[in-house]
Structures are given as structure tokens and as C-alpha cells.
Image 1 (cartoon, helix red, strand yellow):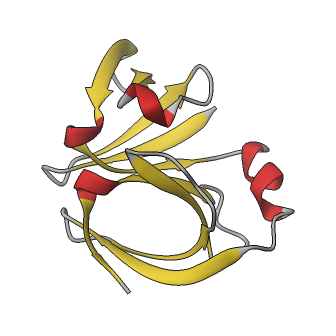
Image 2 (spheres, rainbow, N blue to C red):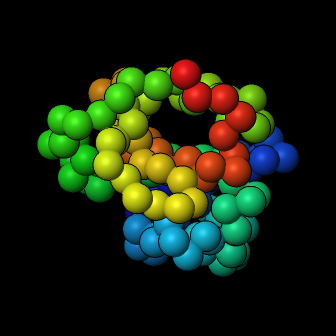
Length: 117
């Protein structure tokens, strides 16, 4: 699945996820598109993982969410529908409020979030 990694050093990488990662692993392994190299990133390095594709549809059916603006430690702001009742110790899943956003599903590691409101 195509995704964009926003890193804490303000780098944005276009990547491919081989599968949806487990947030409790505190890391994600990706294929970086421009280098074709596999890299592992720990969540301390990541501000957001924005995912493209059908996976967002699984979350669109849910109605239990809170609207929030999230500012990452790299300074990017996301307007999101944050899903309630998540028990991940490392971050949270949300949907972009822009229904036409191709990278609609976002995972935000807690370490990469500067402000939530």
C-alpha cells in the first residue's frame, strides 16, 4: 500500500507498506520509492504515516470519532476525525477530514505530535 512518511526532521518520503503495521511494534518497515531500498523507521523518527488505498474504507464506516487539528513536531497540521476507543500505547489512527484526500488514513505516533486541539 502506498504511504507517505512525515519524519521528525521534516523529511517526507513516498513509501510502500507491505502490510498494515502493528502500532504496538513501535516501528514500521517500508520500501522507499525513490531508492527502492527497504528501511525500518522507529516511531520516535515519525510524525505521521498517511496511507493510500482501500484500507481507509474500513475506518470510514465507523461513526465514533472526534474532530481534531493535529500539529506534528515537524510543523505540519492535519485536520482529522480521530477514532475513539483506541487502545494503542504508541499513537492513534484518524481519517483526514478531506474526503477526497488519497492518503486519507493517518497514523500519528504520540512522540510526533506537538499539539492536539
